[in-house]
Length: 74
Image (tube, rainbow, N blue to C red; front, side, top):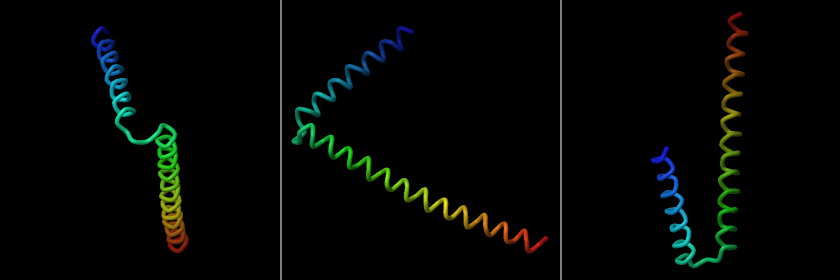
């Protein structure tokens, strides 16, 4: 238990130090960073939706083909 707690404390300190260093050296304001992250999230979400839609269409076409083959053999 002590090892896990020690590890979590070390991780927390490392994350905090990393965040401070990033805030100091990044040439953008917090608002600009937040806006860029939001745009990246929206872009990734849109790409995921497009991929899901394309995959769904592929699966529906495959299902229709299988159903057609079964009707022909029956």
